[in-house]
Image 1 (cartoon, rainbow, N blue to C red):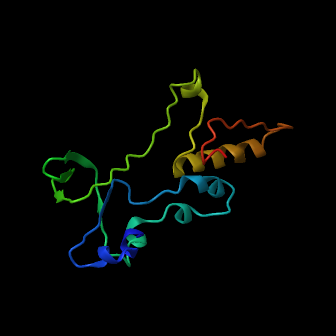
Image 2: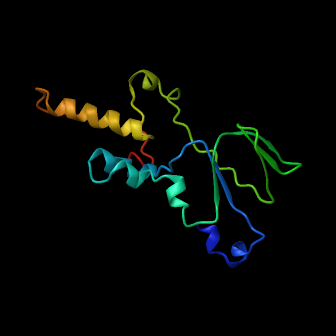
Image 3: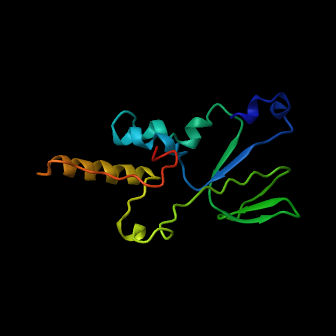
Length: 146
């Protein structure tokens, strides 16, 4: 959407394509607002099709199988091939629980809407327990943890 603000990109000979396997964008720094009920899922995870409805950009909900840098081609999982002049690869990030001993067994990730639902349920269970004090530890404070 930002690219379309540039005059040269609005010319008929420009085309912007977005390839993403998920149908929703996810703004992870606001996941805590979903847990606290201040925001709804759709506010932190808007659908790409809806977000791009007023845009000329093409959205492909697919996974990329191959990138041919020499021929400037991207092959999608359905066999469709996209050509490009400029390619931006944003590969994302995965939470590595194998770095800290015990994390894989005991830590709860906080990077998806499913994680927020799980955390909300766990907090609800704790609130109804007989515990006098509920202690929560947050580790790895990236944008989500802060």
